[in-house]
Image (cartoon, rainbow, N blue to C red; front, top):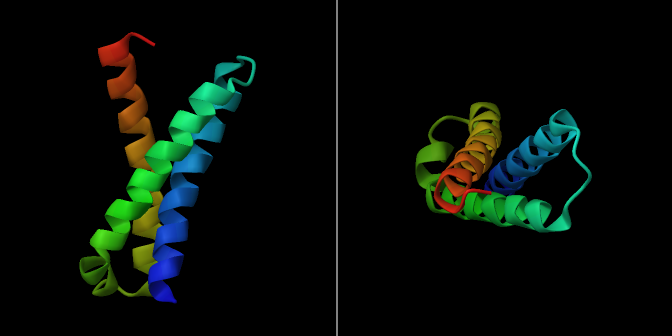
Length: 88
């Protein structure tokens, strides 16, 4: 059960980061960009699932918070790298 919480927290962190970025930009909603955010969030969730043995040593609350922040970080970093490489 703890692993599911960590995975959901990582996914949620990425999605929340994407939604906050969209609201801050003032642009119209673009589904293609949001789909990219969802894919980066799934990547973060998968990474946290693989890293769960390490995350488990932190305890539940610090592990969930770390997963949420990692998900947000993967989204932000992926967005910046995508913009730098693709010019989008």
